[in-house]
Length: 157
Ligand code: FES
Image (cartoon, rainbow, N blue to C red; front, side, top):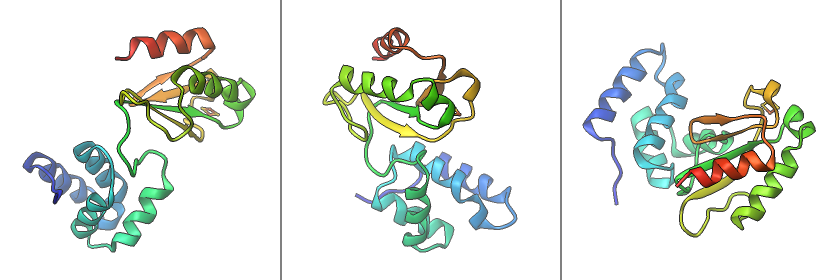
């Protein structure tokens, strides 16, 4: 199945690119648009973005695989990203991740069988003062403990 932007996203693409002095500099926001449109950045989406940006698919793949905010395969409706960097690590991030793994019966990088959750570890999300913390889709959840994590996960359908 060929992938391509909807007319509305194509308009956003042109608007985004026009804000940068060089097309290549818009790579990250364009990839974000593509992820919003296609759900994840598989080989077809990467080829499509490469064509739009005038870059090689290998170059686009390199960018996508470097950043944890891009998903190269389908993910659950709620993408749990637990920060594992210093403040969060000292605050018990590993314990939080272990608790989530056990509660959802998945390992890092896996998605629950019902497609509800995908679990990842990420680097600092710039909310170190409220460690340990995690991001789920676009929202931050801070000062976590097992009770709070249970409440949060149970509230997400
Ligand atoms: S160390 Fe976790 S948000 Fe910075």
